Amino acid sequence: MKSPFPGMDPYLEHPNIWKKVHLQLIIEIQMFLAPRLHPNYYIDVEELTYLTLNPSSNGYTAEENLVGIPDGLILPAYDYQSSVGYIPQVATKQKVATKPAIVQLPTVDEVKHRYLTIRRYASKRIVTMIEILSPVNKINTDGRQRYTKKRNKIIASCTNLVEIDLLRAGKPLPMHTNLESDYRILISRAWQRPTAELYMFSVREMIPDFPIPVDEDETEPILELNNILHDLYFVIGYGYRLRYHKPPVPNLNKKDRVWAETLIEEYF
Image (tube, rainbow, N blue to C red):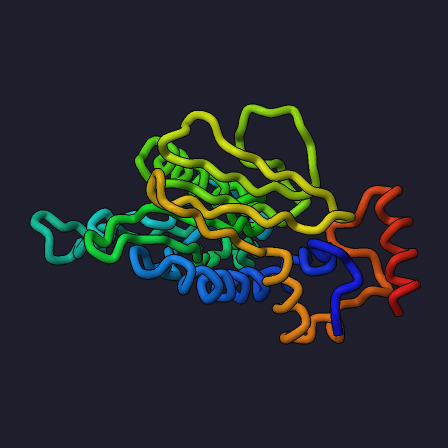
């Protein structure tokens, strides 16, 4: 079963669905690009794992995230009885609360941040990084801060950056433009900075093909992301799992919602 949408299917953006699509898309992009990068380059899936407090469960902000405190800062229990000059205190009769208060502790999420790197065979040098944005690094406060810091380091380096944003939710990552679109693909070549290329498209349009930069003056393979995503949709069978009788998450604007409802009605 094929997707009724010409490009990005907004029903894939649901956080529970996108988590799976994100990983599958990374692998499919690797499979597509690998033979087109040989013999000078190879492409790998990289993974960064970290812990973050879940603000939605406790009201904490990213600045209050205490995860990652070194073990050396956790002090051992003090042995009062073995210390010199220890004097036991005589208990006094005081009324104390017999019922404890019920409190909520912050929950900790383990985040796996996956992305692609293109390296030269000979030197193992990272030439290009390909990032596909997820709710964690676009919407979550702590995750966005972490990713933005990493992004800034890439932009300040000699490494190319390809940033694929197929999520309508959340604010776009920082760039100097007033142009708006549902989805964005950023191509930042190291030798052209601060200038970069931005592909913008709506839910009504196909995802454009775009080049993957490598070293300057070398042939750039073209990534056919629309075909890759639609093939993935077909093979996995997302059409049998998505709830097209309900609005997507996040919902579309009024005009696009009417257009999508008509499209789905005609398709099914």
